[in-house]
Length: 300
Image 1: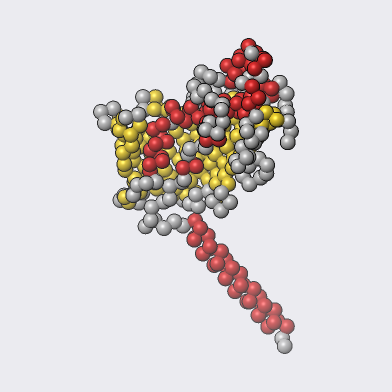
Image 2: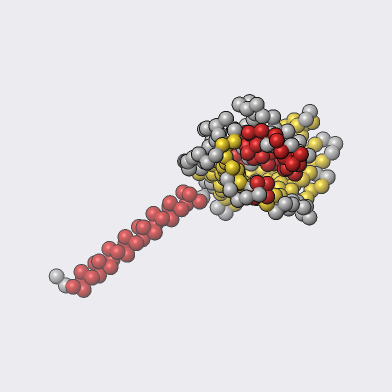
């Protein structure tokens, strides 16, 4: 057999194989990155917008009462400890209570400062969108917050490799189509961000939300960052992680910009046992633990 013909045949075979591989790769990418614009984009789930604080704000399983008031800050907790050292700062629940107070402060930010944005986002998934002439989709509906009715209009539009989201809120006789928050997400709904404004009368940046999720493993993370221009807490943040690690499969990291200190909180979602570390509060860089009854304990 002619060696040249054999070599030529091999070259043709390899070239043909390469074309097939490239073609298959392109088809795979198109499937992943090219949306079906005849269907509305999928709104990211609630967990990408609303951080879960339930393990530290729901006291139904504990005798502890967590004072959810902005004035009840970490500094007041420290003052209580100094005034009544024999009480060990609310007794043998002090480690969990300190963690809960830090989390509770951010929960109040969500309850008081984000009530309207949160309500508009949660309600959006219950609505049916309408396709617009420009190719975008709009969800329009009403929400009621503290007895006041607002009109919400969420617009979703496919972009290159993702989706752009814009939430417009109106209040009759007050303001119309205020862009309260906007964001972007990838087509697979695995990562994105939201950027929230303060309010119609003060449309400054307030909060940035970054999120990642893995639907298959039901894991992910979400981070709230204070972006209020000129604010003392600008740059402060709280992040929440859901993972599959043991023994601690839930994690908060809270950075207090004003104190320039970081609080680390880790716990088990099932048993509720956990630990907290804050060098400024405990005067050391060690973990401080609580058990499944939320009582202080030594290293498990």
